[in-house]
Length: 95
Image (cartoon, rainbow, N blue to C red):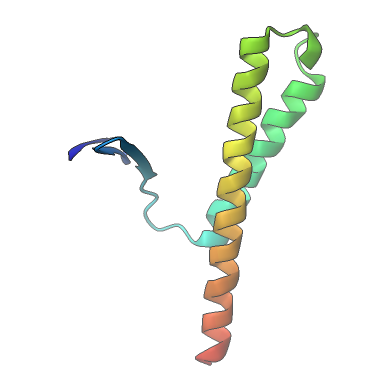
């Protein structure tokens, strides 16, 4: 296993598998979800109405990269929102 960390980001290779983790100290799941959702919104807003070009005018490689980035952010928002909901339920159950 090979592992490298810098700037709160850790990359780890274990055989053929790769893992990438970002450490965000002092952040709640709900707060991080809101931040990721805002990033996704900004990305899609710029893609849809930004800089005088339309999405279709961009090269296929740029389109693929933007869509991949948006999909990754959407997955992070989903997982973080599920974690926030689980945490909220646990707090209700323990109250």
